[in-house]
Image 1 (cartoon, rainbow, N blue to C red):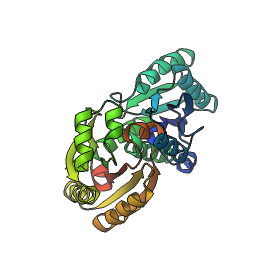
Image 2: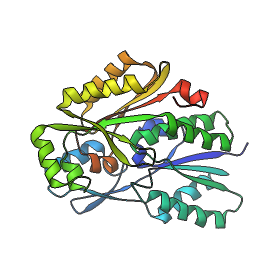
Image 3: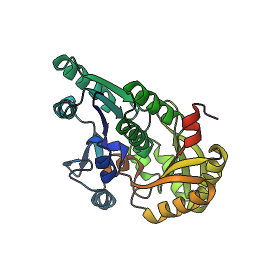
Length: 295
């Protein structure tokens, strides 16, 4: 069977050892902090990033990898024997990475016409993307056909649920996601928006709560309502807020039948936009995944 290579970008926030074990190649997003450019996950760690972020006035920014950077990743995979490449990426509504990958694909396929490259807009971000990549990489190691891997990526995106709360509306305001008045009122009232990713790949607010305790309660109520009975895969994510992420994981294990779990640090590329203190969870119903129907 032809060798399949799974490639993603660093917004997937896949723990490094897990990516290494599964042979996943991760293309870093560029993060610009206080006039210096870093490569997400390579030249700046989450801890260092959030420490810097809390101490500077100017909001960090991000930029997608260049097509030539992506060409380099594709060629490296080909030189290592890959005949098929599945490139799974952040929502095109949030980043230009998907478009850069399409350009890189056309450049590489001209030079290597016997290699198949498929670029997928996964319409999500952070470990909601990461869990797609991880599950697809496991299936690739098991020898699943390339077409099956593409279908699996689509199915995981359909059945997964991401819920998150941000510690402050400051970074959503600085990043242009909400106006100054809303940010000020939110801060005064201690408003915690509960965020998800819409089907078309954009950030959406599903509810709001006054204070973190009420936000936690609403998160757990939503999970109980939206996730069917049966085994699940779970990730708890945090941006420099591990204590709260641990609490979420403990509660989720009480609520749901957790068969596999992982703790995830939200990296600099995603943390730039959500801000330190953010906590999230990603849940995939394994029964829904195998049945092929979403409830």
